[in-house]
Image (cartoon, rainbow, N blue to C red; front, side, top):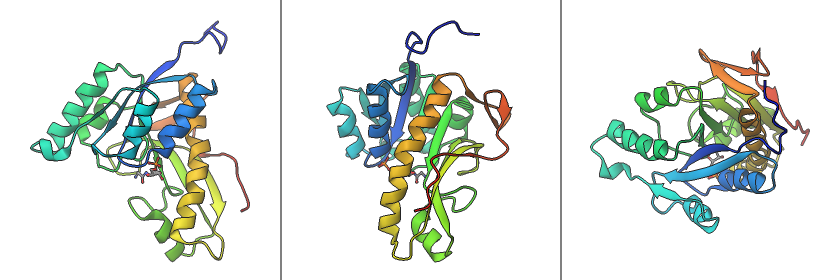
Length: 225
Ligand code: GAR
């Protein structure tokens, strides 16, 4: 049991991995800066030297580094070097925020239970890429995003929470991507806050919130539109 008030609780050190624009990184950083998320972003890591997300981090004076896959003989060597860089920052949680490479098994095992991902679909539907177009093609009614613990199988780790929207008649893959992004920026900081306050954990491939196993993901901010 902790006797610390939320204000007095130390910030959870986290590292964020990204490959692209970094709007999820920005949402997490903004929530932390606003005092709504008790984390300290120790490092932002990318596989792409020119990822705009790295520039976003630099503007906030957050340390960054990049490791290009081309500079390593294989994925295992790349991910091992990445783990060394991450561990030097001593995070309690590693956050994938648009990191677009499959991770090596040893890397995933090393961070088991402290590795989160956000995926732009209502898992288990539409694992992998091009989720928005595939949701349109499948003519599903609902679409959205999922935060889950990462396991060795792609987009198949224990689901924690989802946010969803109804697909509109005139939605395109682009408009869906924009609308899902807005949900992601609410969902991800909320789930990270659960983890940072000790409410969320993963044991043996099962996610627990407040000690209860999550047999289905929690739906956050449900909207009809
Ligand atoms: C987000 O939509 C995230 O769900 C997705 O990449 C985007 C990154 O956006 N992640 C994946 O597809 C992982 N398989 P951002 O760079 O603006 O945060």
